[in-house]
Image (cartoon, rainbow, N blue to C red):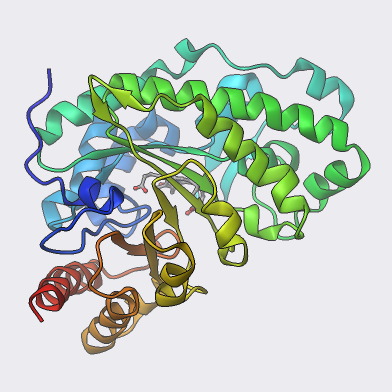
Length: 355
Ligand code: CP3
């Protein structure tokens, strides 16, 4: 049904197999730092207008690949489509970030929550199939979802937060309600990712963007346990091909050993971790993805090159590294900075393998 894959470097690195260069892709690689993205978004009218239209979602997913020789594509969508399908009413006001019309803060709201009908998310699965066709085998397509905990943060707070006061209040005062939300989120996320796999996603990534705001102990109980519950339900292969998983916990470096115990092929790391030390701790067990500080891209080409080389050198010339930023690319990034990043990753990682 789909064209054979021409560049499998990303999938090979996830399997810890040798590659001739280190594969690279960037979190939020399709986004507002690209003028062509802003043009399509203006046509679509809103972020959700983009995400729910299969042709627009396909177009913007491919935009960064037209500019840069990236080694993977990521579905253009958002983690918050899942709570939206639960009936919470997602919107993105310009310059303000996500907002939910309904919030989940009390027993009555929790009682109403349920795993959504996956038909409400049909537009996402249609986009996956459309993107996979449009890629025509150039690079693999990554599907994704938020972690149960990270989704709960938005569902309880009603949007972004600086202090996670409401979600942590609920967690500490009514852990029973929090566990109920997380169980529903985990089962929803598992169904959502499995449907993306069925539609053509060749790897899946779980974004635990706010796992790192939790106290030690709370992280294991309220984030890690539910990421594990998602992973346990994911289909391992599709059409006889293995579907690798990546778990990214921002601020999760301190729990690396526990995260590495998950049934995952790769772990995403933010910039606070040294990749050499991380690799020494997890060995060959999992691939590591990361971890350049996105703000490096505001420096000049020489500094970008030096910092990219440093990340590659810290990991070393072993199989199992996927180059990425430590978090999403900033909307203020000059597009030329990404050219320098991608070229340096490819050139320097090839040279490392020859040396
Ligand atoms: O990486 C990609 O190119 C794929 C697309 C993608 C988006 N969001 C598109 C998007 C992915 C993988 C996400 C994940 C996501 N969304 C996360 C996890 C990753 C992370 O950054 O920690 C989170 C926490 C969200 C929730 C979310 N969506 C926020 C907080 C915002 C607003 C922040 C901002 O930059 O304005 C969004 C909106 C959003 N999602 C944009 C994009 C390109 C920008 C909005 C726009 O175009 O108006």
